Length: 124
Image (cartoon, rainbow, N blue to C red; front, side, top):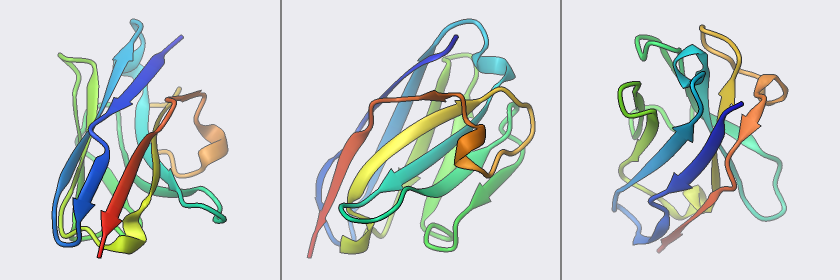
C-alpha cells in the first residue's frame, strides 16, 4: 500500500511558478513509477508528467514540455512537480499517483494509488 499526500498548490499570477510535492508513505514507494495528473472543471483528467522508479526517465505532455519538471527523491519518499511560466490554462486540481511498475507509466488506469489532489489556480 502507498498513501500519497500532495501539497504546494495555491493561487499564482500568470508567469509565476509553483512546486508541488507528493509525500508517500509505505515501503513500496521505491518500486513505484510516479505520475502527475490534472483535472480542470468540465474537462477530463489528463496526464501531465511521469517518472520511472529511479528518476532517470521522464515523460511530459505537450502542454508541460519546457515548463514543468517532474522529479523524485526516493530517500525522502517524495515526488515533485516544478511548474514554471504558468498560464491560466494550467488551472486545475493536480493529483499525484503511483503505479506498481518500475518503468514509465502513461495510462491513468494503470496507476493504483492516488492522492487527494491540490488546487492550482493561475490568474491572468
